[in-house]
Length: 225
Image (cartoon, rainbow, N blue to C red; front, side, top):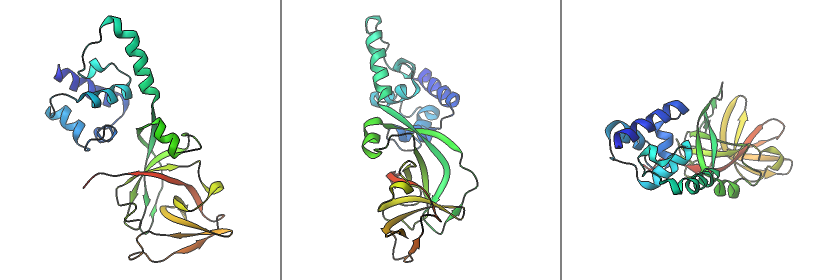
């Protein structure tokens, strides 16, 4: 039964264009967890909580992933419960570019990677303007340490940009470079600076008309080291 569950999960991942590490993060595990489960059989079976999240994400019965068969009398109730759980998850696209927290990196394309699912209530608390403008970007560089470190995934609200500009951390595009910095309002413009002041002490004044404010950083997630 466990072998069937592993094969079924692997088939779902390939069919939906997902990847092992993203799904491992979805269930709060280390990036290699799902790959080890599928390829090595470790663990032998998915924990109930992990199985529920994955079944809800892929919209399949838990039985497909090794869960107990649902008795006929409970099918309707279980279907309603699954729909409720699915409604509690909102998927956010992950953009395959790096927002540089160092000297700046030039970006030619922004290609969507597999989406990451968040609890809907959490997103409503973080993004007051709705979830349509949300995306995930990975940080590259050390200029925003200790707030953000190299490799962090940040949740960016593109709907919360120049028209609502206020003190906080933002992703900016300037001269073709995508950067993540802290900004402070100063009259008609704003000051851009790094949090790692010892290594990056410079700050500069910006005119909002010369810098493209991509969006405000709402949340960051990272792999434990």
